[in-house]
Image 1 (spheres, rainbow, N blue to C red):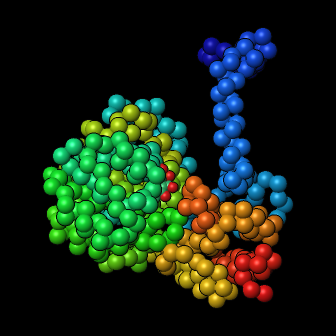
Image 2 (cartoon, rainbow, N blue to C red):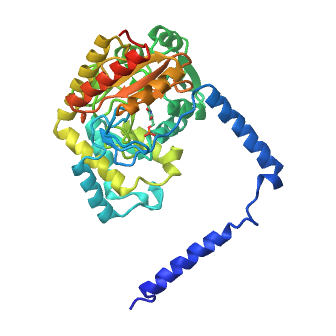
Image 3 (cartoon, rainbow, N blue to C red):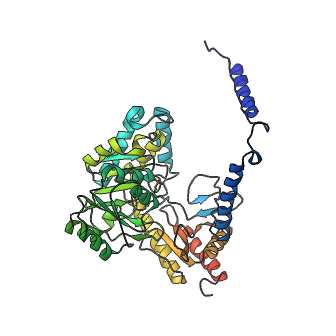
Length: 433
Ligand code: PLP
């Protein structure tokens, strides 16, 4: 027998709502007038916000009202919008097979674990996903995190001591920079992709462990770490190699195994960190994969793993299903590669400067921050959704529109985007009439 009837439950919920509204009445909300520190705080923040706006670098967030896809609905527009700015490289973010599997595991395993992994937050599916990740990369083991940001934040402090040294490319992702800040190793930064500079620094180091750290693909420029030379230097100076493969896993290299595969160097990197939040279904989650002793130690010492909630089952399901699909067929990675070539070739021919190398990140270089923002707005009014990037995300004077190609784009989508770029490019005098 139920203790409460449905009506009683509804009345109860109603009361809770009324009470919570009553909690915040005008008499008990602390206003700035009664708190000078709060007034000063708001002033300081507002000054910074105004400065960012004055510099033309204030980032607005457009609101999507559909699922993530190549074709989306955006609040405030009524048109069909073609999306060219997601990290949805394989178009799997709303793939029905992936979504259905995610629903199945939601039903079977629940919404979440309400726990960290080592207390009572490890389900069989977490172990299954870790096994699949290691298998996909051909590594001994893998460990999951809530994000790759966490994986990067948690690794260096856990494995490096003051006797060790870390050599990091100056343009590595913010999460690597933050992760390195947290560790006590000797910190060396080498010039972006400059192997002479890296060699000089390795030569003069007498550290116990030397760890070279680089993004596999640099997301702002779409350019690639010189991995063959890095591996040579690691051999010569007895160093280890770590790469962040967020913009490579699943789609870069012939079968999507990433930067190692792109250079025909499969298995040569010691540690790989990557994300489930981009090509691999786009939900969330990150991981480290590598030697089993490393993974064992991270489970004991890595703070974002130890002190943060387990990945929710529907998210785990997404990773499992996508990895199964990718280990079955390389059709999607082939498709994103041919789409990329089509876009880059047509844009170069039209006179645009596209940075990067053969990668679906295609930065259309414009220089001026305001121009990039106006250009992006005009493209949106033509149904193409892209974002202008400017300082501090990229160096001053190097503003750009970062176009990202997906396997899910049709050739018509690509041609339509190129035509819109040409149209706007001519009207804003970026390319010749
Ligand atoms: N590393 C790189 C190179 C990235 O581009 C990103 C995401 O933008 C991250 C790490 C963080 O990944 P996640 O979104 O899983 O935290």
